[in-house]
Every structure is written in C-alpha cells, then in structure tokens.
Image 1 (cartoon, rainbow, N blue to C red):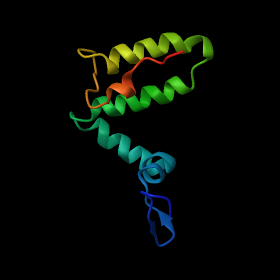
Image 2 (image 1 turned 30 degrees about the vertical axis):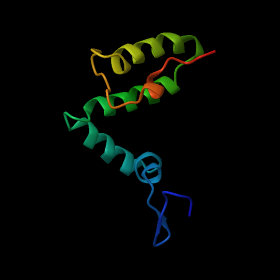
Image 3 (image 1 turned 135 degrees about the horizontal axis):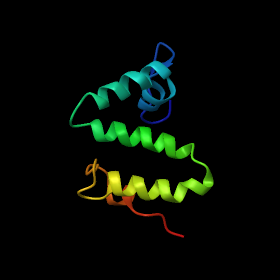
Image 4 (image 1 turned 120 degrees about the vertical axis):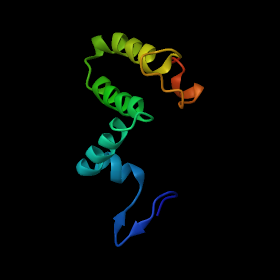
Amino acid sequence: APPGHTQDGGQETSFRWQCVEQPIGKLLFRRFLEGSAEFAAAGALWAEIEAFEQCEDAEREEAAKKLRSRFFTPGGAEHCGFLSAAATAPPTG
C-alpha cells in the first residue's frame, strides 16, 4: 500500500478515500466540520473551493479574490489561520 494508506479487509482507510471519495463519509465529515465552532471555517472553505472548481473561467478571478479575503486574510470573515503561508500565497505567474 502507498505510504499513509492501509488496507483493512480489502478496504482503503485513507482520509481521501473515506472523507472525500465516499459520498456518505464526505457528508458526515462535512457535517462534523460545520457543527464545530473550531472547524466551521474549514468546512465553509471546503464548500467554497468545490464551488470555485465549478466556476466558469471568466468568474474565477473574482471568485478567487473573495476566497482570499474571506478565508486567507487575517481579520477575514472566516479566516483559516491554521493554513500555512504557502497554502494561502497568491499564485505566481
């Protein structure tokens, strides 16, 4: 198995498989995030990133600005201070 992935009775137990690829696991994990004051911003960020991925190309720049100001900027409405500087840096190029 790849590093970080284990097999249990033939079922992969990685976070990605359980909480992203499996619909019920994803729903339950999102509800967990949204139901916790500590993790609500992370749940909102996840939802907004998924919405961003569905945006038309013409809408992406404006949507990215809103994401940065809401989640990545200290003092933003739902600042995700747990993210690294590299994760929140504006794209280059």
